[in-house]
Image (tube, rainbow, N blue to C red):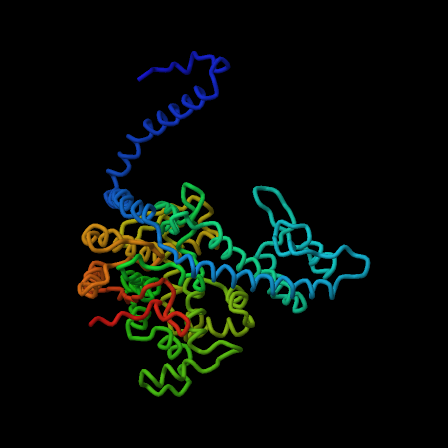
Length: 498
């Protein structure tokens, strides 16, 4: 191997190719110099070393699914493309009618490019024609008018007459993204291949994006209405195993371990979590006391289109992570007063059902302000380098441990499946709290699904009380990735072993 003395080298006499090679060599030297210090740091913290080794071990199964890809039914794909195009065309025509109705005479008409955030037509529509207040954003020190989703949703909340325009624009954008996935991101062999970044997020959840050849996309974010075009290979049957309410259960277990307060985990484990939360939040209702009757009462209307159970599900998730009543009202499209009343009953009031949740917030705040780090039950460690007294940092810390725990549980099950049954199971995708794979459709199918579910089982034990904790999982099987319905008889349905 050639030795290059870069200190005494005249780079002006080097070709672009030689400069590129020298740059890469210097890059490698810097990495080599850092390695001994990194290994020394890992040796001093065994839990961090285990997490690092685990992430390295994940390379094999992730590379396998990146190579294999997910088969796409090209006929269903074409049908879905045509339906999307028809819906987009209809929405665009309706949007043009709305725009022409408010456009003053003599003004330049709008065209079909209007919904795109990069076009100059949107600021003209909202800020000149509709005379709404300008929405500004600052990115990398550059302040400019914004027409992104956040800006449009802010206008949607305040100005009723802007809502028809915003609804159409956001719908067109969402459908256009789906259309792009179907039209351009399938490889010539009819397979959808994503690239997974194992260390893509701070919580340990891998991120997903287009592959190295510019096709594919985020497999974790395929719209439900498009999933039916992803199908099992001939002779195989799909299975999806997902953890049930994993994040909420992890939060409940964590609170129990820290404070010895198991009320939230008890609610999670007592059956229908969201119905049980509704019973605790609204104890004055005449709950029948049986599973079916309680669920029926929880499904009655609470506010607008939301049932009591809907509010318990969505409101609790937002409130778990210190979401404010204002944020809750904005996301759920309810009044702030309704959101405040719910949170007072759920966790923030004097007689709240779960006062342990704000207690957990205080514990996280203390940890990141005194130790500047948090460690999950799996040993994953995150350091906080920003302003540890800010609400934004605190909310990140509050969400970090339960979200990271859920991610690592899924990844561990994903790796164990690849390690132990890859001769019978072909992994296809990984979600935040689920894995998707295909199995040969023969008389051993149920046996294999049962074995994978067992591999995904993971028990944790509180060292102080000895309480054993496990997040249950549910299997769904079918011949395509969509859910079974009247229009999709071959979709995923609840696994009922023979």
